[in-house]
Length: 80
Image (cartoon, rainbow, N blue to C red; front, side):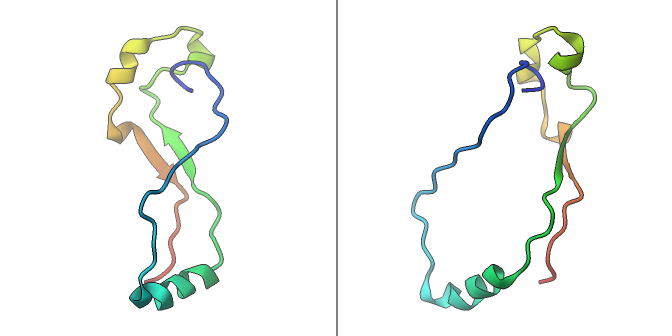
């Protein structure tokens, strides 16, 4: 959305072969009892052009973004 000017709407994900084995039950039960933390903030590096600011579509950037251009701020996890 940042590069193209499109507004994001939803994320759809299909899980294949999802299952829980009997020896997972205790761990899954513990996971389901935990209170979720607030969602982290997804951050895109300033070097990646922002269509909302520039008004210019730059498709070449779709092949130039790198994993280091993305981060999560405020990510929390439960103790092991």
